[in-house]
Image (cartoon, rainbow, N blue to C red; front, side, top):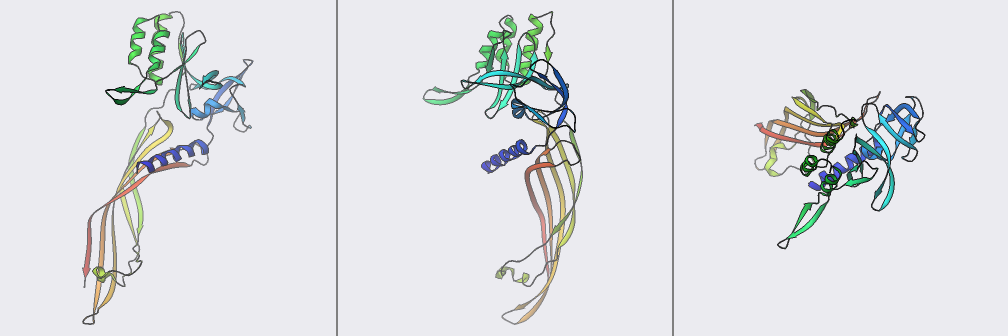
Length: 339
């Protein structure tokens, strides 16, 4: 079951990466000659933004795609800011658009690739260092354990050396946007009094929750494949008619801006009661007696639906993609047989 869930999640996010609609937002890019061009920029995920900038002068213009070696930077108004930087990955030099988190006496950057999240720090002299926290194996009493390397702590302590108090605080932070921005901002304010620090981090939208009433219409039918066993002789020659019945309940929906601002968790719980009936006749083989039966089947059910839901950008057509599971629990089932 775990493998099925894992595969489903991988397929889900792969489809989002491949099929996601364009989401052009107000912004600008800076050419290598420092000329600034305003227009619309496609708001993609962190992996896509690290590789390219998709620009349109206005909504009706043709798209233009820029690589990190073609422009210096691009930014969404009051949101994310990306700058072109040359970094070394696995002993290979690569040019990427890094998300600029904070600009101060020390700068912080971020990007994401197939291997995961990466944070980099500029020591103020133009030297970029990756902040790593890799899992390493250690052996204690012939038993192997996995331990976080926390290499980033040593690098940050060295870079923040002008403030012993900040260097000490570094020992208790984790690798995240919030922690790195806060500690860098605090360090800047302590050692640089005559210059303001600029935070470019995107302001995440608030978590939004909604709930409400759900009313549905359901159809149920029973069909027979093959002969009934002797135990269910009274069902022979039965023809249950299809039944339309309602369901009613509540739904709860919450967004997940810390993962993706268009991603939601959705849960729905409804109650339904279905009643199906049929009439048949049955000839008892020993005494050759004919029996007439009226059969009524009543089912009470609690229906549960859980989804991860992705809502594509607004437009004339706004599709959604969702993946999840459905479980129905039956209780107080009744079968009434009148002969």
